[in-house]
Length: 592
Image (cartoon, rainbow, N blue to C red; front, side):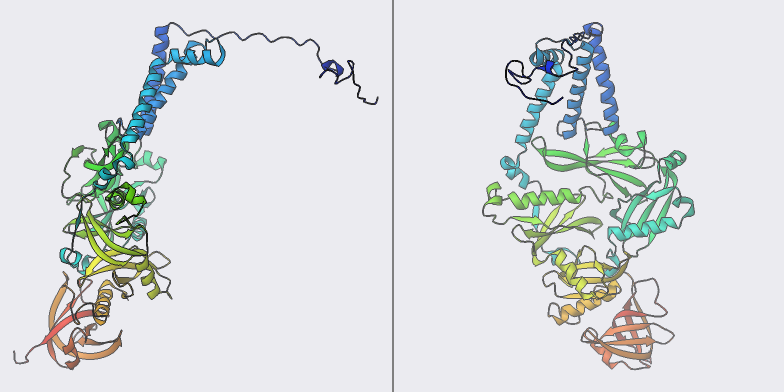
């Protein structure tokens, strides 16, 4: 039957939609039964107790898992309280039976009546957050932010002594991690059960720059099978000799960040210091080799949430779990202030020491730190180094800062020159055919010249060569297969450019030696414009390297001359084959 449209009272669309015009429609739908309101659970007192118990259980579980600091200066504290209020309100609605009249408005009044105290608590917290954020706002407190870090100016070459090459750290964090992993792989009794914690800490240990880290369990099953004895060892990487050592402990470490449940270091700290806020926890060892966790205490010094600083630390014995808070940490602690806190505080100083408006308009004397940092050992303390550049340009540095990581004593050294990235590119260009990659530079005083020192790594991640770049003139670059050779070449380049006096010698290293003997053979070669005389003594297969520009008398040497000479070794003994730098000699009378 064809479908037709008609207009009028009997049409399908006349006067509106008529459901009776469709076959199968139900002209008398059955009305739905009204939903019965839920009854409240017990008395008002019992409902309140139930709500409080549920909220308490939730709070304990959340606190155990998330470990928020119970401190008004901690943002996570507000999240914790908000969640407790929300849980209580949800429980109150359920236990009260959703009894409400008047639609949305009535429902709102019902919830407010059941949750009056949580509502007030939330409103109070919101007001506290708003006032705290306002009191910490950098626009209003720029002067306070600029004073977080006390800056003194210094003379780098006068205040920072030259370091002998046998004290220069040669490894970066990645290279140290590779050595540690390789060393652990040699230990059959450990490699199947444990891994190395990737957070290496650079410290001074018994007068040597080293990186240390703890072991961790391979997985949860291996934790169950080994937790009784704890972690049996930690790793020490010598930054100079590039040697890795696994230090086995008489009793295993049971309190680390790799533990679980009550022995987890974060949980161990939170239960004992519930109100303290902590920065990153770092692994260190004291001078006797006892493993500790250094847990810097964070404080907010501007308003409620601004001005992050460190005030003392909790030291936790990794073996026993014994802990103590120190306002002034012991001198063996090397790392209290993290690099990011120091750099952030300097950036506040550089941006706002002339006021907030100046940081936006005009930007007179506005400076920031560069994108990178490194560490240098000075007088048994570890200093963090980073460059400083103008906010309007990152092509060159105007100076750099050195900051003591234990005391936060910071000095700014004015020295216009290349950025660290420019120095890296300059060093890499010297060996571009080998495609070596430079590590982030270390700042050294070489012959009174601020100088970048960096390792050059191959594709396998291992150190292949070394480079030195002058900070002020970054086209002054020298490389070498050893640090001693690199320093010798660098000093020669400095002398050729007139930056130091010709023949200026490096400071004697701890393994400088003096011997005497008879010259058996002399060879010569011109390297970098200088004549080098390679002298072999009788009863020796190795050669002494006399640079004629530094030791002019070397041109007069003859076979059979009896001389007393000085040289510097990188190892413990004179090599059977090879070349070592010689720093001078004198003739010995045959008759004497």
